[in-house]
Image (cartoon, rainbow over the protein chains, first blue to last red):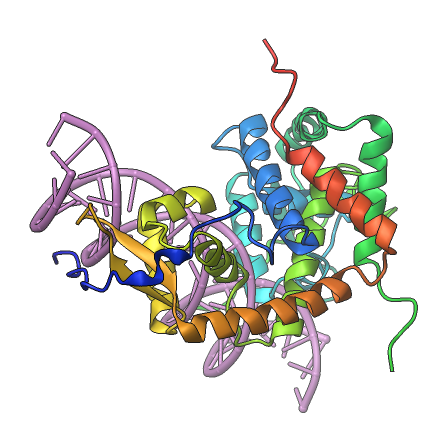
Length: 166
Length: 166
DNA sequence: TATTGTTATACTCTATAACTATA
DNA sequence: TATAGTTATAGAGTATAACAATA
């Protein structure tokens, strides 16, 4: 279909000239700064790991499985804070990439235990090395003290409230 | 379809007991801290604004239009770093909500100029107030100094490299 | 020829609901 | 009854390609 016909409506509201580039609501806003940082981090991630690499979410899942060998899908879903249905696709993909395997869980035939395969362990080792490079790149504008400060502040920000409100 | 039949494969790899909760690659990683902070920020956003509110991305677009009255869709797409096709849906939605309007751009009949409607201005005023509450909630674990430090560090991190690499 | 807005299409991520097998 | 894994489905969000109108 053709583009909508522009309505002839250009009246005297042209007073609203832009004065600054960063809007008031967003300028100096912590939420907005975090969002931009996250977008930036993802860009660098794919620059570091390549466009065809494992996604950040799947790398997180792979790492959790590595450090919690034998974890069930439900437990993994809880840790990653996604639904049980959602974890199926993650596990399916990691299994299709031959990085992990599902094994029957002893004592509960409803569940699987998840384990890294040997190729999965090799891949994770490589990913760990790449992660170091990525982390260096991500923090390249910061010195060591600033980098640690930043992590500390982020973790403090998301920590559960110690002074619960009434 | 029924669940896949678990393969009887539980051999002696049960040695891989989880030792710690946070995997090595992710523990102390800046990229991971940013991601978790972002997820946390979105959760609080919807808690503050309500589940049926304007999305963060659309709030950003609305604010940009407010502060750059008359901006074209292409220019807005560039500022938001999304595709021209993508901006159409954003603008369509904001227009359907009666928050903005498209007007014919003087001197270029291919383009629209985007403006907030009067209800859009009212809504943005309300959103600005809510944003303040949200920002306070988001930083409730930080004092003022820490909050400013955090923003400063995030902006420093994403700032373009001053020492370009060869 | 190039640009603006649009549509068609597709892919990722994630969620809910309903189902089977098992507890 | 409850839980684990699965499927079907749907809704955001985003992208590319192709197109009409216009520059």
